[in-house]
Amino acid sequence: MLLPIVKYAHPVLRAKGRRIEQIDDQIRELAANMIETMNAANGVGLAAQQIGEALQLTVVDVSRAEDAPSTLQWNGEEIDPASVMPLVLINPEIELGEEVVVGLEGCLSFPEITADVPRAVVAKVRALTPDEKEIEIEATGLLARALQHEIDHLNGILFIDRLSAVNKTSLKGRLKRLRRESGTD
Ligand code: ZN
Image 1: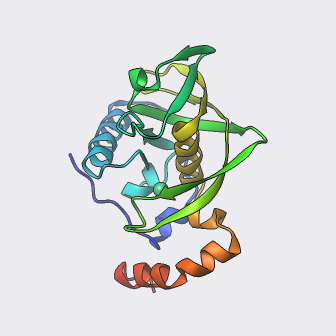
Image 2: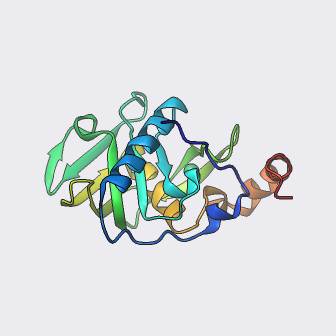
């Protein structure tokens, strides 16, 4: 089922997600609907806040982004990222490498806006999967960027919070228009 995507500046986008204590059919169904919604919108990730639920749950799929490569270690073993997409991550904890790279990002909650965002080159994530397995993954490339973007959402942080002052100023007019369109300004 396709879910409506919440747009900036709806307050749920600023809510920290609750930890999921029990992974039940309701959570699995929500994750399946989020994957369907992400795919229909051609997104590489979608966080629960973006469909109006402040939960520690996100989905990611970088398999269609052929021009932006990723690497992935899955529980210590190097694997083809496409082989495990889409990823469903529950209660994820992220650890970032020190090296930073700037890259272009968009967000399904910010239609038609992209901006250069600095992110760690390497991201390590521990999370639970819908079948209640604990995983530890280490990513680079687009997947590392997508994980940081989505896990930020789970903590109420948006990509516009990570922009340089100059880049943020240049987006001011478009952000204001989005707030107006979403009735939050
Ligand atoms: Zn986003």
